[in-house]
Image (tube, rainbow, N blue to C red):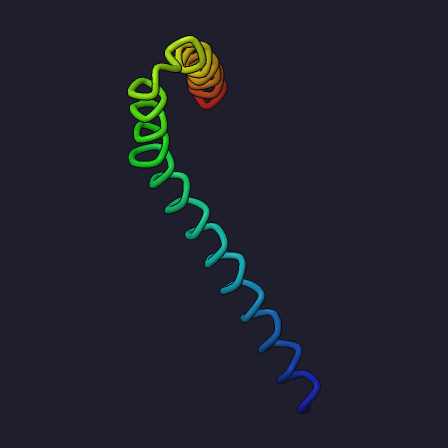
Length: 72
């Protein structure tokens, strides 16, 4: 009986762990998209590395277009 209780508890904890990882990934992706990536681009612009920033922006735009069309 105790074994059954432990197995059920482990299954519930696994579901909570998976939910937590999904939530953390969503929050991290949001922060990277809204804060970190633009700050890096502005930093590259201010450092005079526009020749590096433009290709990164083009690649990010292509990835955004492909992933948005795949999701639709």
